[in-house]
Amino acid sequence: MTAAADQPVDDRRSPGRAAGEQTRRPPGTLVLLRNGQSEADDGQVFAGLLDPHLTGVGIAEAAAAATMLAAHGVEVDLLVTSPMARASRTAEVVARTLSVPREAVLTDDRLLPRGLGCLTGLAKRRALERYGHDAYLEWRYAVDGRPPPATVAQAAGWPWRPPGELVDDAALIAGESLRDVIGRVEPVWTQTVRPALAAGRGVLVVAHGDSLRAFRAVVEGLAGASLADGSITPAQPLLYVTGGDGHVVALGEREQTQRVARGLRRRGVAADRADPVERDLGRRQQIRQGERVVDAGVAVEVQRGGGVGHRILLGMRTGCAGAGRRRTCGPPEGVSRSWA
Image (tube, rainbow, N blue to C red; front, side):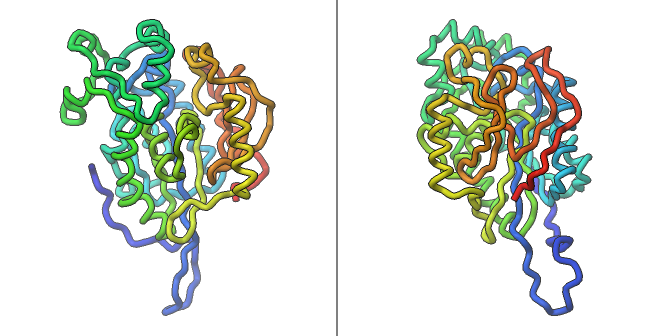
């Protein structure tokens, strides 16, 4: 882990205080951002701990997300990123747009993607054919579902191998459960992110699908069926408003929040990139356009897009549509309502 230098807390948000007056900083904000489209995403391949780069579409997605954050006045005092190329490149694009200084960027190995064992490097549809629906869903979505290790023959054909000093062969071949990933990302929250939020700093975390799903489980206390719905759409920022001690503040009345969330789960809505395998399995259904949802302290909106249930996080979207080679990105679109 590469630590950012200790910086004095910037009081830009509370200018003009008289000498000796106690400075009271407002609560910090937390943004989670999943990497843009990678070479593995483009081919609908499980990347796991492999290290594919962003595609041109992925870079455009990252740039659109950065522009969106800038347009909404998001300030980032600390940026924490996974070291994988697809995450670090996404972070680089965002940092440049938001003028995040180099010393405020922290690379943390604990945000690495989930090890997917025998699924690594395998096309998703091929994985379904080889292992069957039940195993596929168990390994991907059950909190204790762990894919078996990859064989030597499987590993021999993998593209995008990461540097050995980043991921050793044993870790690359092994499979992790979501519970394993929760265990390794939790200290990132308790030791790094929450203290920064408690100090009133804005924090951006850039990582991957399962590592951010695990991070959400820690931040929001997700469990059971909610974990399966905790995925973050690639390159769609998810923002939390926090309290004075860094805890997440719910943006909606709790009873209504839970009722809406239960309704969505009954309809099978999830927030992930359109996956033809999972669509075939009935995990995603079309939903009404423009429905507003408040779930576990996170304000989201839902629209019908590409024939698949898709959440627009915090009323923002990048203007990207389609999937794989057909995916294109236009300029970001904003909405009039505020984030608060």
